[in-house]
Length: 547
Image 1: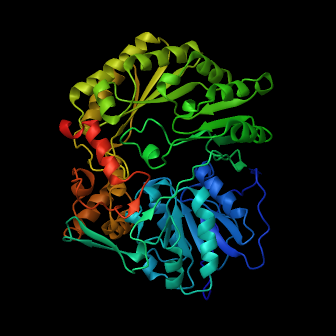
Image 2: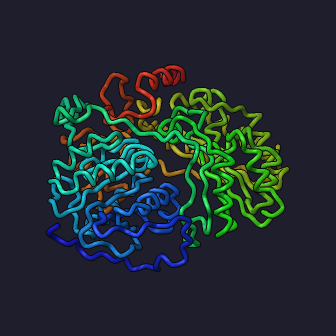
Image 3: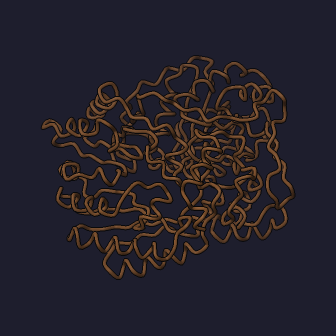
């Protein structure tokens, strides 16, 4: 490659103190120089199990020479990398992607790059869900699970490594799960109108790109343990992937279907045993960890006398699986509180979102948590759920006050977010309820005055999250302007005002209820379930009749 990248060495502590749980390969002499980045601080990025696993997968290949990059820390970077990848877990981290590209001397837009620049690829839940707002900034997007897309991607790149960029991209586009945004043309009914069509620019480019799903029962576990992770010295093991409940708003469930459980004897226990060789802190991850069919056996293994000094953390668990025995195990292993998602105190709303849970089960979970020795219970819910009425909020208040009486002394925290529609879910056609901000304040007034620790998420930033989660390619120049204006809430309003007439207004993306017949920005990207199935689930929710 002709030009070297701008020298970029963030000033920060080194990678010392990492305990690697895999053996990186010694790169071949002609190995592809690759930078693998996380668009946030090292402490946050290294805590991402997805980032860890992808990094290890790439680093095990002799045909790659891999360097890691974070916003505050980098390994020695190659002067002429051929590939630069980003793991994207949070929509608003796009600002950091811009910063890193500019610090490396790489144009933001793929169309402005020349052969001396690396191919920019990305993956993760944000880009697999809806990559379109970022389509102009990535050359390649990997749609799906790393276990099944990474190696085919690298193999395909090796096959076209010496070709010109156009040939490289057309070759990569033939691989299942590899999406090349520049090879698809999007047309609109008008500058401010709906999408008219999404079509490949060449006949040999697939009309749809299907997310690739790993269906095995050996799931992920930590490849590195470090005291500088957000969860200090934690070894993480993925117990389940996806969730059998399929709450109709939930990207984590729908995008990762089908529900898979890790093998106990061949996966979970051996992994935990490896982790215990370097740390005494274990984290069990998954959307519904306690629904593993052998969870009691896993808990019994952790409860063995020789593991008495092990600290145990568990991701959000299904409420009706919170037993006194589980609470006691967690309490004995250093956990002070447990997290459950209830969504609402209204059983009617929970039926709409397909949350198979009753108020008595929530109450029993609180009683069991206290009886097992836990000090706190964190509950998560939402405001602005499609079909929500003020009476539903009052029922949420009644539920929490009832828990306070049923489990006196148990510290209750209620975290509440605004409903945000996500691609590939039955609620992708709904917008954000404009009344949600007022409803968040209603809950605050009635919960805090009664001694409930109420923690609402920012309604305004939820609006921006919705903008990106439902956005199309017309947002690219707007996102660039937002960064130039200072990356604040006001920057988005200013950018929309500046670009009036060039794209739909904010309300179109955020608040409008979209027709189930219109072309969605991600229409050419196939998730685990087809749209017809999502529409069926939407009809079953009864939410349309309630709004």
